[in-house]
Length: 396
Image (cartoon, rainbow, N blue to C red; front, side, top):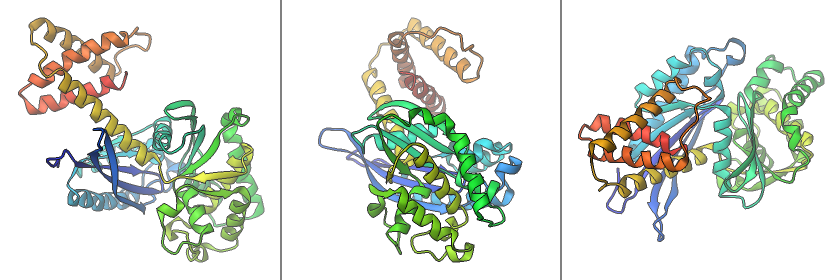
């Protein structure tokens, strides 16, 4: 719902392997007329959607149900805040699951628009979420439940991006399913991580600051600071050394599962995967010759919100700029042709070898499309055309 000042609320949900997170923000214009985000709600719930996916490549019915119940609560929260758009993206566990279509349909039945994104897209969102926070070259590291994303760059320029199938849940199921944290099993896990991250060692001699996002990284800070109540403001931009991470690891390993749940600063539902996550983080930093990492609360949720808002602004600009674009049968024919082209592209019917139009030509075609959308009387067809136009704009 948009008020008379143009303010409205948007919601983004991250459906990960281990947790489900909600971010609701108010969008308002500052004195320069630029849209800014005012955080209203940030919630996280451990749902363990990816439980067992590493072994059988299927989402369990009970895991799906846990996640759907969580999403229902998130939808109620979004309705309470009169969220204009509620969108979700699913990551590693959903990507790997052969029955993901069943899960995605259940989510859509709740009235939530959802997309299963690639590891590289996930990494890009993490970087976007931090590109406005740091004015230096950074490597954003997101250790999730099923995969870990690495994105290197500065400001809005990405130099290196990689998603690797190592995650806290995946490692726990592979090496520690019996709660056996022997030196032998820990060493096997370390070697497994080293083998998998050979793909990123090419950047270890470059200059950058290591930035950790998501639960594995943020938990290290809350445990270090012994937070009885999690405070994201205190976690954000806090640093932790490899030595301190190893102290955390010793603490975790010294206790059984039930005892770990009592550790101050550790979310009880994260107690079963925190050891594997910590091993992954320590190993990555050592392999990259980094002694410290800074932890950021700005992650793929923030990045997704920024990306959606940028797209909305660009689409609004296009539609407003060409509201009065004159109508003619010739223009409609051109727009129809470009529409058919992009529809073919979405259906996978265009060869990768196709030589695309130049950016200037595409811009001209967007003008034609915008004119058709503006003058289309059928509401449903108009909304469908807008979605197509958004995807065209993404190419620029």
